[in-house]
Image (cartoon, rainbow over all chains, first blue to last red; front, top):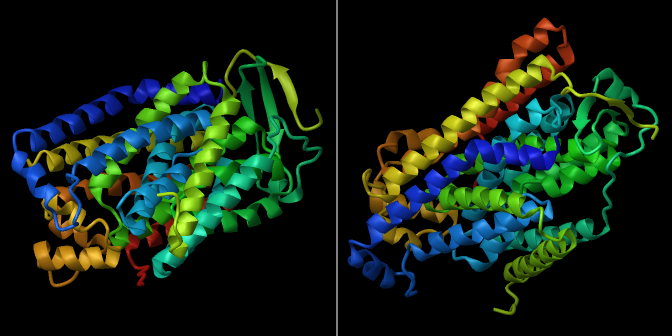
Length: 334
Length: 153
């Protein structure tokens, strides 16, 4: 049973909740807006100086996060890395709320996927615990730094980080079964190894890891960046677990997803305690990303991975450049 | 392939007890958290539970930094002695917008419960290193959740 099967398992469990959530959101918005034109009218003259009704933004956010969820699932990235630069660049929400929301979106997806991956033995708790301890402690520090720095500096740094992620995505190669001749000493002491069933081969696969200390040290930076920018960190977790530490690709992807449920929890609490949560942003985004992910998984069979990957990289390049120029106060295309 | 030993197997490999337990607790917590979040959001957006900030006024605030947002919403709507940070949202949980924090807190708290849940299994196995790491993780997450880590612009 692979990662796709794992996501399908999550879909089978959660389809009713996503459907119910979407239905509730649509009905509730309809209840608020339709019988009361004065609400939209009042919003049209809101003191923001715009003529856009208040509910348009959450509705557009909901629609956009569905698209992001589809692209994220097809492109093999988490939702957070698309969410934060795009929403902070093109929506009126302040970066503080976008980062808090991005973390909660990434966290919810990771929490929902975690049980399935753990029970299938694709995610390894023994591999995740030491990594999570380092990453989650550093994510707290990252979140505090991110909230203490002026917004333009964080926005500029975010743009640079997203552009660096594009470079990583372009040059990093994945290895389905990395060559690990010998487990290193630390991973042997910690008994970090495992077995999973590779459905495509019809075999069980024993795996072990090496270069544990360099790998753990890299999670200091990953944790800091996850907390500082509210990005989630799947884009970095997978290459480090797979290419540096030598875990098989499927184990790396599943453990990375599970790992986010711990790393993002610590950073999300810092943002929540600071008040960086607007439910009208969080819930539509969360439901939208989950819905999009489930649709994306179903499209995997017919989608062309290379084309999707190019779209995701193009989107990141575009939104990274937008964040960078916005932070520096430079003009962009629009 | 030096790294891997592949064997024919028809059955799923056995999952460690603590991993299975963690997954089971996580499943219950996530089910509860997401369900509560959706229900509270429906109560909020439908107006059944009145929010502290009226929905049509939200665009006046979401462009502000969090510090300005808290100051402005407190001055114009909540009229509390202090702005609502940390766990102070519990004092205004009767407002529709803050009611949503219940589901978010459940989602944020479930991982702590998971780690507490596997501690006995790790100690029973004599796996002291992982028991210590799980305990430290509980401390890290509890510290993050405590609201003691104040940040200011």
